[in-house]
Image 1 (cartoon, one colour):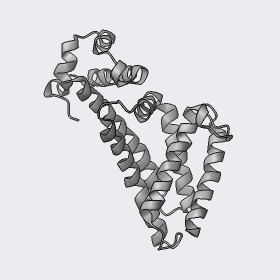
Image 2 (cartoon, one colour):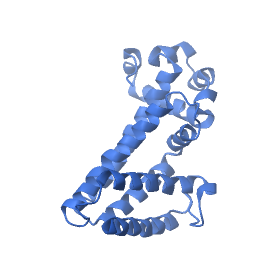
Image 3 (cartoon, helix red, strand yellow):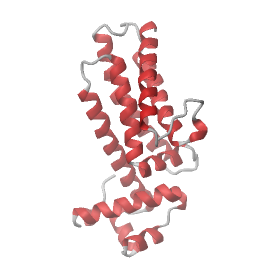
Image 4 (cartoon, helix red, strand yellow):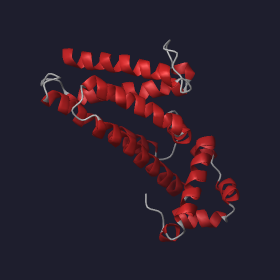
Length: 214
């Protein structure tokens, strides 16, 4: 989502503040509960300026969400590139740790994701969640393909199925740390990085071993 030229022409620090405050508003209230009046008051600007910048509440949310996806993409890219040529279990462990670290350091972004994930009435929900799943597949597919090419995984392994499993496990691993009711006895928490890392290591080994059998 591209903002209007008016928004693009204001100083970068002011652009960042508008988007940061909007992110907090959506994280705290969800899309339907977010108030452009309250956001304008937090920013000390006229509500009309927000609509001039983004066209609508939906346009503002799209800008915030697209920025969050781009930011997360950078974390995944760094993890992928740093582990090229490493064993599959090590690469998967790194993704589990990086995903958790991102949520730990960017809680508002993840709160928005969770609100959207569990609220079927969220406008543009399918588009945005599809964007997240596509991002995950884009980074996981080459990891599986490279493991197959190196002989670490059998050539017969169906890459889309492996990616589907990895995406589901990675998502649940992070969710279980952000929401205690989703933890099934692993005692994971965003406030306990060491326990999370140990679990990530064991889980990565389990996944890699299962794919070798498959």
